[in-house]
Length: 471
Image (spheres, rainbow, N blue to C red):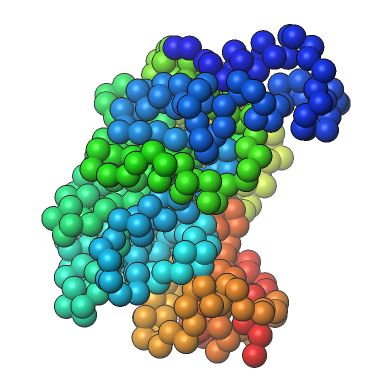
C-alpha cells in the first residue's frame, strides 16, 4: 500500500529547500526528526481541507478498516470524540428541546469537556451494583438500554445518541451488535469510544471493530495499540451516517489546531503500509504469546489474570487482579517496575498491561520472568486486601441520581472555581470532573453536587483535592 504523505515529506527533506516557512527549527535540531517536521506547504495538502496526499492516505485507511469513511486526527481520540458528538447533534431533529446524550458512566473526561463545549446534558447509564472494577467498567445489556430509552421517551425526552466506551480500561467489551440494534430500532445513532480497540478490525478470526458491529460513529486512538506516534487517531463513519465531506472536515477543524503535526500524519500514513502487510500475523503471534503467559499465570496463581477470551473480553489487554497475590494494584505495579516492566494502569485492585503486535519475544520473556518472581515471593491470596466495594458505587449512583441538578455541565466547567480538600467538597458543585488518572473516569462530574457517598471513593482512588464552583 502506498504512503503518499511519507513519500512527499521525505522527498522534500532530500531536496534541501531553503525553508522560509514554519516551523522555526528549519529542519535542524537535537531530536533528529526535525527535517521531517513541516507545515502545510505547497503540495503537502491540508488536513481539514484534504484533497491531495492526506486525502489519498485517508482513503487507504478507509479501505483497510472497511468503513464508509475514515478521517485522521493528530490530537488523539479527544478531538474525534468532540467531532462525532458535534455531528450527532447536527443530525438531531430541529426543535427537539434541550439536547441530552445517553452514556455509560465509565466515560473518559473528554466526553465531559465535549458536553461543556457543545452544551448538552448527559443521562447516565450506571454499572450493575455488583460490577467488578466499577470505576472503569460499566456493562450495558441491550434490554437495559431499551428500558432506559423507553423511560426517557415516557418523560418526553429523546437523546440525540447513545455513547459507549468499548473496550474499557480493564478490557471489557460491550455487546456492540446488540446495543446498536436497540439504538437503530429507536431511530438513534450509536457512538463508540473505541480508543483502546483500533486493532480489533485486524483479528485473524474476523473483525470485532465497532463499525463492523453496527456503530454509526467511532473513534480509535491509533497510537494506543497500533504502531503510530502519540496523538494519532481515527474518526470512523458507518454506512448509515449521512454527512457530507465539508461537514466532517469542519467538525474536526472546530476542535483541532490549525497546525496539525506532520510527524503524526506521516505516522498514520506509514501505519497503513504496516497494517496491509503482515500485521494480522504479527498480531496473532502477540496473542499467542499472551495466551501462553496467561495459562502459566493461571497455574501459578488462579484468578490473577482476567480471561483474554470471550465475547466481552478484548484479547490484547492483560488485566491482573492483584488481590490474587495478596497485594494492591499499586503494589503489584511497583513490583513490576522494580523488575524492569512499566504497566499502563494500576488502581487499588487491578493492574493493566498493554502489549502490542510490536512487542518482542524478549519483552514477553522479561514480563514472564518478572511475574514468575512476584508470584513466588507474594503472600497467599487475600481478596480483602484490595476488594472492590460494589455497594459504594451503588450508593454513589443512588445519591447522584436523586439530587436535583443546579448547574449544567457547561455552566459548571466554565464557572469560576477553586481547589479544596476532597474531604471538604460535600455539598459543593463539582467544577472539573473528579477523576483517578490515568483512565480519567470521573467519580463526580461537572455540575453534580458532591454527595457524602463520594468520599470513600475519593479516598480509595487517591483523590485528595476537588475542583468546585466558587460560592
